[in-house]
Length: 431
Ligand code: SF4
Image (cartoon, rainbow, N blue to C red; front, side, top):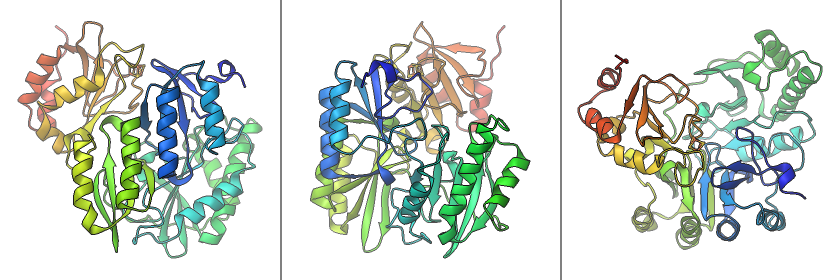
């Protein structure tokens, strides 16, 4: 295949067959089912990232793994290598991976159904549906300890009882519940909704690329076509943990986060080694942009946490780095005006208490905002003078009236103790 012919524009959904051009070369995204990798697979991917890319990998917000810095001349060899590993997505223009699961799927004692089996049935049922948009995805949530409500899925399925699956659509800041089905009927109901959506697009009835963009009466028609039953609002659960030890008696799962979701080939190999030394020889990619090691015996947890902390992983749920968002920035991205990740870590020193309260800081190397299209409590957009445009409570696409150096930003942050302080401190308008 010609690598050149299939390179995507930014904003599309890259895969292994469809790499995307970025500032540091081609980005190749892998979509293993359920985010599951064996230790050997993880080592082989890490080795491939070293040999064919720049040795940097990312874990995405859907729990996929991307190899960065691949050159056009090394891409064909990488494609052939991943094909031999069985890690190339099916051909075609649809979603590279339809379903997203909790990293503790199959282990979570609070889950009310077997989400791995349900996801596989849904993938099989939907495999032949044509013309689904590439970004389309479904979250399969067993109702356990790691809710998937906030991922923005087209269709969010959550177990609300031993034999009940509630169907939700993501809307701007919540979920819109459209009905329920019994578990055995769920793959067929999903097939009816997806094929109905595809038909609406093919016939020109709707141009919506996501289910959430479909007109309400069309959504109601799809729910009726799928024979969904009335739904009661599922119970709210605490947000998913992003790092730390998760109990799944009689063993533990250890969720390790990575600053900005960025992982080196060496770190991935370390994870593979730990999974064999301390656990079952398996690891799972997490939508929290980290990696989970399942089946760790109690006595191994302290040693694993200690080694992981020293290797640069985030091991505690209150680590301020979890509240930082930054794109690759300079020098990895050719469009970057600033070193966004290094600046974010530096600036975080002046606002640790705010970040521990859960406020988010997004530092972007340019206005494209690749790392986070949405709002953050404080968004900083890189400028060619090394400073930042500042947006409080908005995104990189919002107008900024305030342009500050890093020292000025840190000085103002050091006197802010609450979200209101933050808004006041950075609310300045031009003279
Ligand atoms: S937002 Fe960051 S990664 Fe995206 S193009 Fe700009 S500098 Fe590059």
